[in-house]
Length: 129
Figure 1 (cartoon, rainbow, N blue to C red):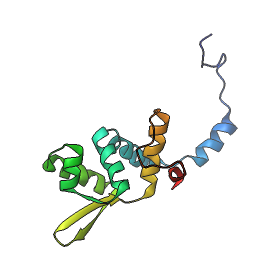
Figure 2: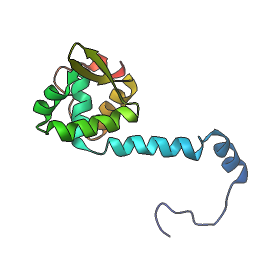
Figure 3: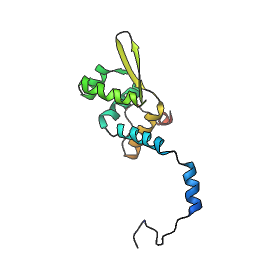
Figure 4: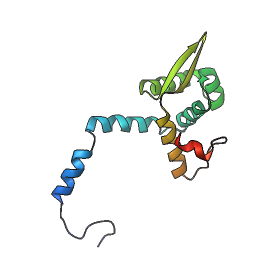
């Protein structure tokens, strides 16, 4: 008897049908998995978290993350194409910020699961923001 495996081979067809009706399509799951791939890079995660504090330009992010502007521009383009960040031009400067608060919540939840303390300045009440 293996732990975590049923002792008999039985499929509850009604249960399977109910769950199948509520699952998103393969295309939606593929897009969601692509977002998680983007979040699999620690530098991108730190950059996204930095943008939760305030909008930052490529030069600011480059210094903050200790990454070349060229490499960072490529990463930001990926995040922008995926709809995770947006840009706002102010004169000659272009600032990046999060497109939606949901990505911040996802990262904060992952940090909590990983046993990481909240970043400095992140209050307990802000977690559901």
